[in-house]
Length: 331
Image 1 (tube, rainbow, N blue to C red):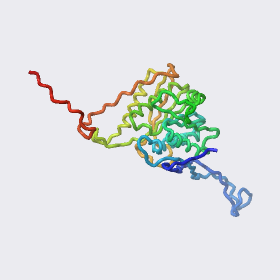
Image 2 (image 1 turned 60 degrees about the horizontal axis):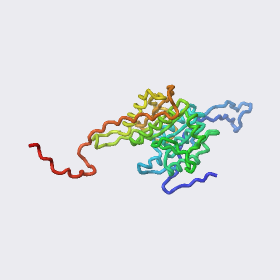
Image 3 (image 1 turned 90 degrees about the vertical axis):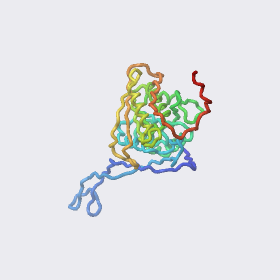
């Protein structure tokens, strides 16, 4: 039997998922509380009534973390993507799905209510263990014969971990299944650091080039505004770099895959309880073969760095070494 272990730095939250289209058939009763008999006091009409029904998703997470452990929190982008998945469940039914940067696993769990198989991936033993606990807590929600597998996938490495001694490593059968059957990739709120954003897009490009089927990638994120000394104004550098990488991915026209990018409207029903602010966005990237070489194609060229204006004088690490006296001017 699966054993759930809780740690002192985690909390367990019930996330309420509203099932807005749930309907129950109810029969009207006669005056003595009996349905379906002939007589003057009987109303035998069967009516369809909408009833608000909730299911509960149990999620272990932390309330606040350092930057390196942000995956242990649940972010609004994950709620938005989970809402989209639930509202469009028929699109994902019986699909094999890969989530990159799954964190606590909330979005993977919602996806697993419809998909045939979900690979929920991230890095770090603590985070993957938390994700596995959440998958175990919610396995009763999975689709019939559905699977949710927690696996390690590092965006900064070229290969999947297949070492048997690693707890969350991939088997050869899973690697083959990933490349042969995956048709959907999802990621929520994963672009907050430029180096990781580079790694993310390289990973997407490399994986899609190795896949047999066309693949659709769904990306959700929240534009986070910050006041920066660089601009002396409110800006969103992480979002700007994400947009830059999206444009470059779409511009890659000479590889084995063609990528098309489009924003998706966020007007679909809200089933989870969170604040759907205007800065939440959802993007759809479609990857289709062009007939070129696949399976082990080259990495895409590195994204062109965005220009970084001179921040000017300000706090910094301190002056460098004394360069010494100026050389004598020419006589």
